[in-house]
Image (tube, rainbow, N blue to C red; front, side, top):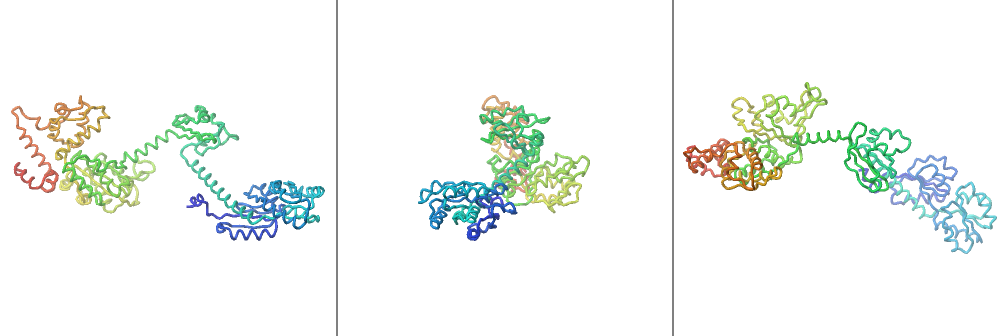
Length: 635
């Protein structure tokens, strides 16, 4: 990415204009450019100009390299510049040349500050007298040359302009020439400077974008408490900032907030509610060191609306599957077999139908299957088909366009099938949908596409459907209440969940789990059940299954007086007493109670299963044992 290039040094073309004062330097500069290690990203222009020709140049470039009076002139134009300084090596070279050629007793070195700076440190090395004369404006060169000659100078060392003035007057003179090392250093510095400027410009642009596209108002205040920077959002809230000719004090904008502590001691202000105009905002202020402080503020109403949208989309509409197979409590054979089958189902893409009584955990299994599948990172959308009227359910599932029907939301609405794209849709109580919706659902399953209400555009979707019911769909088909072709589409893989009465000791495990789950919430001290209490819980029918058991445990936590619940407390919390507690005065033996209970359980298992083999698996016994018990109970 372009951004990464700049952050790592940059590979964008760098345009450099190099202004040389004399002809021989032009060739040297071009040669150094041609050999430069960064030559592939440099576009150079080498031109020879005098300082008085600078104003006529059209400098369309990133940066200019120049020296002496030319550099001084370019500085006034506001163009990025590398002022190529005259080094001690350049001066030493010129002095040696001057001494060897003219054998002077006194030499004058004339030029701007960066030319004469440091002469005092090297003049004692040479056998003649050397004096430096600083001239920052070339207009004063003629009179300076006259003065140095009157003071006894026998030769002059200067830049191009001074050199030619001396030569025209017949004065011994040497022109200061820039060495290869000086030229190379100037080019390297130009490349570094452009990359640094580009990085800073990009950081500045990125910072401005972040500021302006933030949904918060942002103010940067200096150490005196004046507003230095404000983003677009802040300007809308405080229009006076845009109109002000001078920086406004933040206390005029936010008089109700004491920012002196932030600036003085670095104390933060977090989540303070302030009234700005007629709207309530939440405000934060944090110190920013020597830069002062940063204030951010957000409209409270907008925060509340955003929170509501997030909650609606992610939770109320069921876009998140919270449960996994690890959340299924129980070690019994029946529930273990259901989990084993469900895990196998989760690894394929076929539609699943979950059959089970009310309260057996159909949605728990549906969420677990989703979270164990390849769609686990995609949406999980759940809807209860029995809870909504036909038209409302249709609009929820398929969505609608603007004006599709009276009362439709402006702009239309995305349906749950679209929201679940690449994820899972869980249709609970599928047996309750109307014939019209059965037809539309069949098309979704066949074509994997939907059409919003009031629209003619087909939208392809990729979803897996898990449906569930406590009704026998085959019986509904026989009664003409459910489409047979839809049943076959839904019932590719069937998962039957055992009723709680068929789960044996799992009932007690679930009891202790729910008690522990509710203890802290209900401030209960209950931890244990007496053996007789456990026995009566095991003997109860629990027609409401796990949901009924959960409610029972919640009541028990509230009503229990100590850490151990006995038989009396348990019975008082039950909606239906166990069979052993409903005996007539004449009495029935405990063995008879167990026989009756066993027969009822076997009958329930046979009712839920398609074969005796499945019923035996549901009960956690082998087929031969089931056959013997059926014979004993005349089933």
